[in-house]
Length: 123
Image 1 (spheres, rainbow, N blue to C red):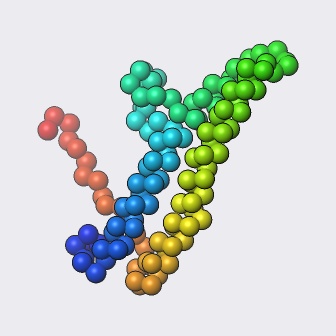
Image 2: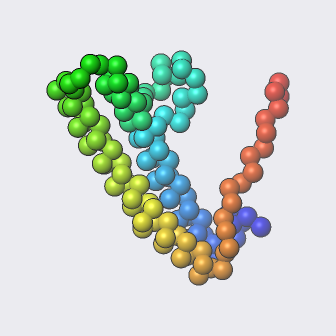
Image 3: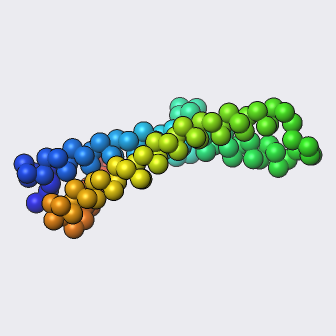
């Protein structure tokens, strides 16, 4: 039986959904999960990962020394990462251990995602 159908598991379902939302929010600040091709940059903003890769490529292609602009850009990106890292650390060090404890106390061995139904082409 799915947890969503079990009224006694309401706290587990709600807590799991809250954690999933936090993970999705942190992920969307780090990467653009909707980007699938090189043309998707037009529709979906680059996030921290792409900005860091671009800066690394720029630095790798330059003759030393680093420019002040490159250093400043790194500091900006490092600050952005520090903010997201706080969210990630909260999830990993607090939210997930509390959720796992709740699962153990409820005698639930594991949680698995729902199976996605494959869409048929032409349907």
